[in-house]
Length: 213
Image 1: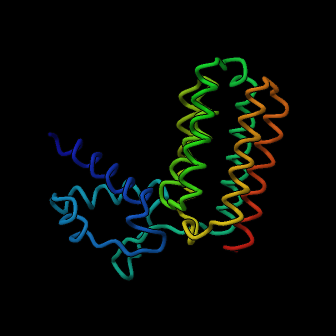
Image 2: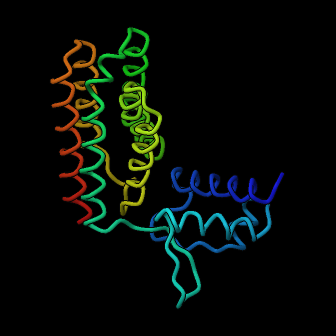
Image 3: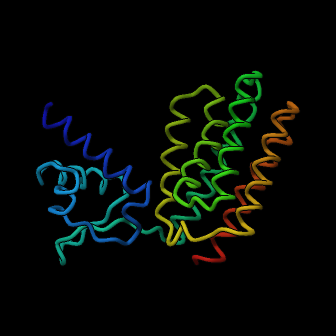
């Protein structure tokens, strides 16, 4: 395996650790500890952290000579939330045109998978399954560039403070909102689907505004 390939593999492993909440926003990253945990040398870990820093997932303090997982500022969060809404709502018309019975079944299954995780308060899994539900809508538009951009934007919500701590009433609300979105697709109603997606995105933004900022 080439050094470049190992650097990128390490980058993906660390990013997945972030998305699995094995490491969390604000946490200091120690290169030697990460290298031991991943069973590799320190050099690819350092290179991976530099890659993540360039993408905004990791911060570096020259004064303290350390890396930390980035935490979203209020302005960053608001910008991402607005962009996420634009991307997903903008995908609806093409998504509806490309919808088939099989693809609708996949969307409905992803809504169900999230529901089960939320009801069981599977916090980390809930975040991943919420991404998969919404990404499946964007994927229906048939643009790999759009899908990749949406995933990147959504993954950055990981960097919210205490993202895994909510549950209860908000979980029930998200389940109902997902069901409303899936039902609109099931009815072939693009405008209802778009409105449901916008309402859901804004509901999520209001909720996180209230508890984080």
